Image (cartoon, rainbow, N blue to C red):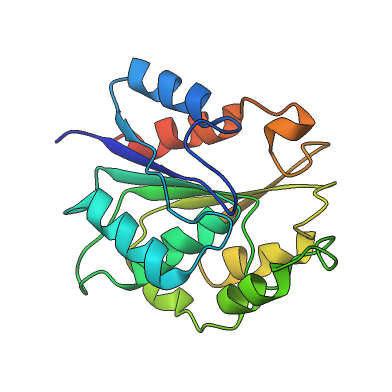
Length: 194
């Protein structure tokens, strides 16, 4: 079976941003088929647009299908997993700077509260999502200006993710010079070992 990886960008993101091109290139070298879908209206993301887009991009998932999400992309992946049929499993997921509780430092930005409320106040069944996930890791930064460390609780307690806190990686974004995340690459390699 072909091992496939889907990299899911976040709010106001795009496929060529941050560390996505580097990660895609490195995974392709290891024989993975890698897709970085472009989610439309990334400045005004909505669950009802993003989850169907990911569903269409993936087609039929299996245990050789892996996901890597950044920020809001993590919620997109979890909400996608929640929609899968009962006995379907995927190989694993890497969640980078994900959140389910709250965002910080964005209070004064126009349009932010509406989008934030849309994602944080729409219920998600984390146990159901976990039932489709073989393995996962959630990676946080100790100085992320938007994602506080208490956001790791749901990943650890509900999704069963291994938690890693990196130092001085900000929001894992190119604006802070982050264009590679070796732990995300290594985690997919580890998940894909049979």
